[in-house]
Image: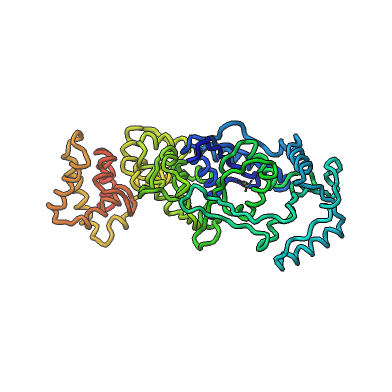
Length: 486
Ligand code: GLU
């Protein structure tokens, strides 16, 4: 482990809402900060004014807060730093030290050099230089809106770079970026665009340096540009951070994850009654593997303890919505019933009127529930309102009179059970007596009782339902069903 404090960051562009992929990047960085006792910062990369989505920043912050990923220190906004000319100042510094130049090509010059570059790339030859390299235009002449840009100046014969970008692993992944095989990687890339705004390549390097970022964990689409970032750090005389790249997330058909695969914006999961800890647990396992067999981590702290960079996988992670449902159900079951009720009420999935009764209901229902939203159906279901029993379903293929006899026998048997003995176990014993005395098997009697009590095809065990409903309500429902076949 590094001896200095780890400083990581999440740097979303507010060009869209936070989704599963972005949340995973944020989570891995946060987990690593917690695992190492480091810092996690938030930077909003809002320089692409044309693509800004109005409430994206709010949604991103709310999503991170919902997940429990608190950031340290103030949020950095790149747009503010553009206004303060921070990036221009740094560009000026590079021009002074011979690592950048103001590029002011005529349209014709530009066209010609681009064509020659294309040929060179095809022939794997060094790129022909931009004419401006020779023009020595001073920084003070740079004006936005006049077709000028500021470009990085690679040395005439740039070295190939071997960049180890997963350097805590036992098996580091190295990317070899070579001007011989990939001349385009050594193009004099733009630092400041003609509108005066910095490129992502430039601004994020500056900002990471100023924040003291020691490690960057992000998507592997950045691998091929690593040589640019490293070169920029070196041009300034700075140490570059460590890089860890995470593989993409795939959906069902092994194609890039999309909404069709059930992936949603983070706050949608909140609306649908998922628990933030379950979402974090689920997302953490897409592309990361813990050391042992444990898959369920019930808190972020537990996850942070288990987190390791070695566990980040090389191959793409899979998004499996069924696993998410299962996992959310497990997280729910692990909570106390009181807590589940409070969460469900807070999310408007539940309204408590009788806490003791609700506790009994949930003691049964939680077994089958996957999300808090599923509780809405429980709250609106047979535990809280009379079932809509139909004669047809009650009778099935039997003779109505027979059904009447079975119901009446059950009523009489249960009537004799004193209120104070009305427990699930006792009720079950009474029902067993009914079966024996009538010479019936469960398959005959129980569907009738199930219809009478719930009008639902699938429910918890019939004696458990009776245990929760209580004596009075159970007998009333049996009576009401019996009247349908009288
Ligand atoms: N703003 C970039 C993005 O959202 C950040 C990439 C990075 O982490 O450096 O893709």
